[in-house]
Structure formats: C-alpha cells, structure tokens
Image (tube, rainbow, N blue to C red; front, side):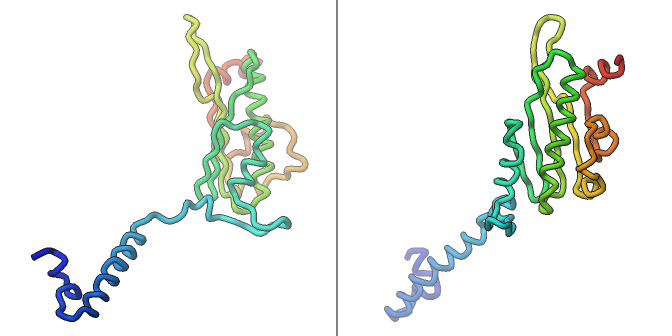
Length: 183
C-alpha cells in the first residue's frame, strides 16, 4: 500500500474521482509552492508615469549618477545607497571638497523624483600608512532625507561646504578633518 493510495481522492473505487484527485493534488501542491516564493523585489516593482512612459526607479538613479561612475548602487524601496570612488587628489582637503560637491550634485538630481525617501552617498579613500601599505576605507558619508531636501533651494545652493550643515547625518574620516582644520 503506497502513500498515494491513502489520500482521500486517490483511494476511491471510481476512476473519475481518482482522475480528479491526480489533477487536484498537484494543483494544490503548486499553489502552496507559489505562496512560498518571495514577492518581486521592491525596486523593480516601483514604477511611475513620466512623459516618456513607465520609468523604473533603478534606471532613473543609474542615469542620474552615471557621470560619477559609482562602484555600487543599492535601492531598497525609496532608500538609495551609492558608493563612489574618492578623487585621486593627493591633497585631502581637495578630496573632501570633491566628495561634498559630488554628494550635493547627486542629492540635487535624485530628489527630483518623489519616490526617493533617503539618499546615502559614501565615498571611498585610499590611505597609506608610514610603512607604505595602502588600503581602501570610507572617506566621507552624507545622508539626506527627502524632508530635508525639500527645504533646500537647489537653485541657490552652491557652496558645497554648507552641505555639512544641512545633511541629516555625515561621517568624515579623521585624516580628512585634520587637514581641513589646519587650513
């Protein structure tokens, strides 16, 4: 006696009821399996109407940040996280200046889309110790919410140094801060 013969529809004497059982049980199995599959990723499901038709949020972010050649872009719902390479300037204050300018421009561009709730721009820096060993670490991180972005008059916001005062949170590597404080 097999397991299949113990199922209610499959142990019937009627061939028609058994045939229905062989159809119903696999269908039930597929329905249960389908319910266990995770839903489509939020970033690909989010779309909006524009003048050109449907635009995907990931495509919008990629297009608006392409000039900085980001190393990574992560979008979760309306939260955008961007990892940028740091400028190769030897002067740390210039590296920080470029990180501020890039972050300001990215905020200005991305917050034009109302689907975006927060943006984090993380810039990497290559450091060298006194023994000549090099490593890559985070040089600066700027976080801004759409609420803060709406307060800024982007047409008159030119000075990237003001970014430190208006962002919701920031991190600047201590080596970059030391040189800036000396100036």
